[in-house]
Amino acid sequence: MDQNDDQRMADEWAAALAAQEVDSVRTAPLDELVDDAQPISEDERRKLDTILDIPVTISMEVGRTQISIRNLLQLNQGSVVELDRIAGESLDVMVNGTLIAHGEVVVVNDKFGIRLTDVISQTERIKKLR
Figure 1 (cartoon, rainbow, N blue to C red):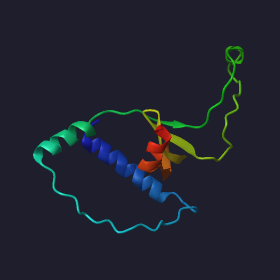
Figure 2 (cartoon, rainbow, N blue to C red; figure 1 turned 90 degrees about the vertical axis):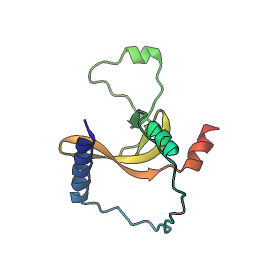
Figure 3 (cartoon, one colour; figure 1 turned 135 degrees about the horizontal axis):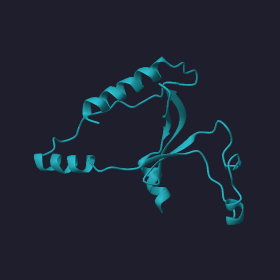
């Protein structure tokens, strides 16, 4: 998949999400962004490009539970495993096993996706590492 395919897919998702009715979305007050960053050198740009190309694994977690090995071995088709979340609760969005956001499941063009509802701040992520 090249950059044009990525951009087209992102545009399709954006259009499909915009077309959905969203009753619970509210505009958040945001501070005005000030671009006081210094221009980066060519060497820094090359280093940044290297980092931006590192693949990461993103996963969505519906919930967790603990069961004994005995119960695990008794699971078969049709078994139900109770999770620690209630229906309608947001999903955890994990990047390389680290919680970075919460979201809700959406369906666009017969494919599942996730709409981020809350992104964990950098400060909060660092606190959870300790």
